Image 1 (cartoon, rainbow over the protein chains, first blue to last red):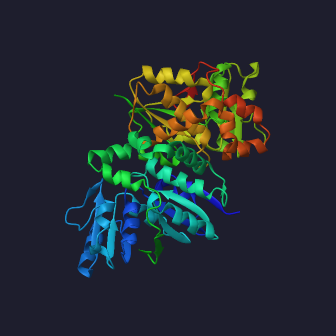
Image 2 (tube, each protein chain N blue to C red):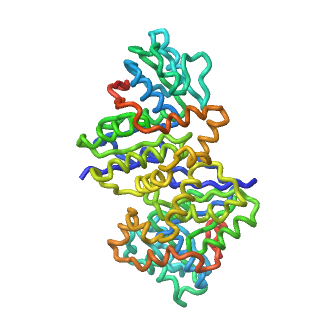
Image 3 (cartoon, each protein chain N blue to C red):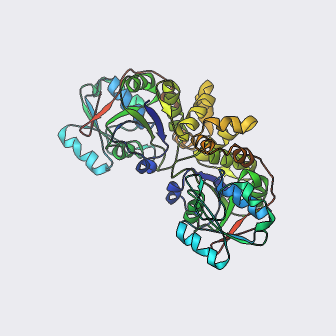
Length: 233
Length: 233
């Protein structure tokens, strides 16, 4: 039977052999939620960059530059890390170069995967369908915050485990823990996350609207997938 | 205010500066439960070893050798990793040299801490009292299983966070996640852990009695503490 596991921090990636697995990278607040939103609004591709300057340099090739560090938009970049910036017609058919504190780093660490897709609550059921119809075992990689675990990414991992529990075997404790937490939080995820470190951090930046939106399940039926280092729909 | 944090795997220790903190190492099933039991039964000291051979070599100096690898007692060692082996008068006043798959490794990684104590459900309240009366911020290090998180150590971390929530600030998500899981599991921890990877692994070794015992809170009022590389009561 296919197995499903959860890597709670990119700093634990070395414990997992991803060469035969589909990796789902989740940075729910807010990198992967932005990416999913962008694809739902017609973006052609998103190239993840770890390095700010490399990311910025793509502008001369016609890319839209998107960047966030410590929750704030990078000076001089076209767009930041709010999903509401990725809903307009200005991005249709365009290429985006994207760099964030945690999300793009997690994608880079998971590059050796057999298949890599981007997950968020916004495309939860579409990702679940893609995984259950595939042949690979699955590793969900939570981007977290600078190596530390974050509750919102654990909840997403738990939601995906909950959806896939009949098709996959859970053979480690991280998916169990995530599943329990999701089922506990499910009745009111926003309230549940009220005490979480990242939500408090973002609340200070006044982006309650972003947080509430990023926790909505199944808004967009897209599954961004990494092909030759570039995300496409 | 003092803070309390949880490191879910020894492989994440590099993210935490422990020089000003009290670190609590927990390997509930079963290394730290054995250690606590041994001190409650009059052991003089326990020296943790990462290396099997170094541990075995102490026998010539009069040590009792205790060792476990992959849940099984090491061939030729005096004792294994069941708390019931540490309840007899044969250990009173003796020195033990101890090596296990995860627990002793976690102690080694946390050696730079300002203070290091050993925790388990068996001495939960005594550890909590020690921490709340101290001045240091706290990091609970879950030994896990070969770098991966384990549910039973998360539950212990959650139990300790629950006891200390009024004296310490929780500023990261790992303590929150652990606390939620503990409160969920609390009514019947043994049943809750029934699906966990480590409990299944141990159940195959037929040590249900050990597991049930290791989940009992407050059996022994001891707080083993590392002094110059050696644990003493």
